[in-house]
Image 1 (cartoon, helix red, strand yellow):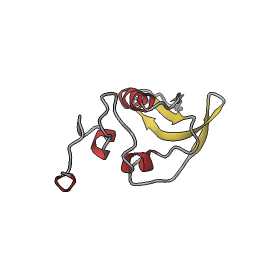
Image 2 (spheres, rainbow, N blue to C red):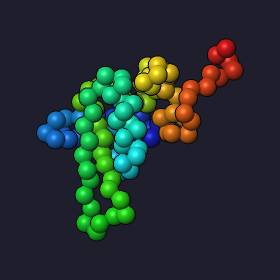
Image 3 (cartoon, rainbow, N blue to C red):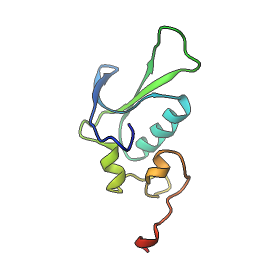
Image 4 (cartoon, helix red, strand yellow):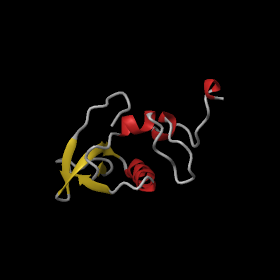
Length: 107
């Protein structure tokens, strides 16, 4: 789910209704998000997407069983944390940065 769109999508993964976090993601992105969400006590479900012509790499859909969870709200409310206890910023979520950098106005 892009941080520009707070639309709440629900789908069924492995017979369980889930809030979709992201779809069509790579294995590396899926592993990153799965670790991050599990560190925040969310139960994660992963589904391998199939395509008619075999694509270059496998794509995955990732969801959490908490139906009211919205990653956009969680990130901007600063309620998501990394395993190290750092706040997850939009740059961390998008894998542009490794750690949270305090903005100058928050000091």
